[in-house]
Length: 150
Image 1 (spheres, helix red, strand yellow):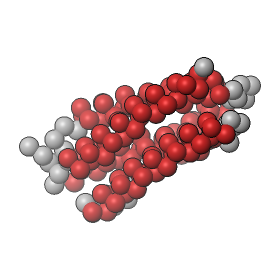
Image 2 (tube, rainbow, N blue to C red):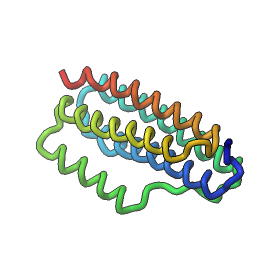
Image 3 (tube, one colour):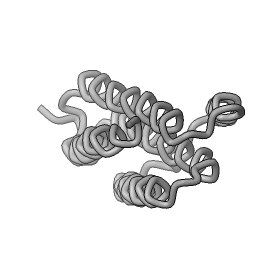
């Protein structure tokens, strides 16, 4: 039984998915300028484009469901992520180190997808579809980032 009409549950669910996506986008934006390797930059840029497509899907679905503005991560979370990336890459900007950071973040995003899906069973199949696409993107990105560890 789906609760797509329960605006509170739908809002909570779409916000969770949206914030997961926004964290990935911010991570890539914060780190891509530190990457020297053109192939790696291109890979991260391609990943960012795919996350931005999912971000837009969330925004359009929220509008269709008449949800007043889905929420980005708060400034504290953004500052924490930015600081973490900048401190971690201060002395090590190698592909290996940056790939490791991205892999850790991507895996955390994947775990968040699984938890969000479990926490929002039968809420809204349209959000489930976006979440499934996000999960698939995260799994693909894990595979694509591993080669930069070598």
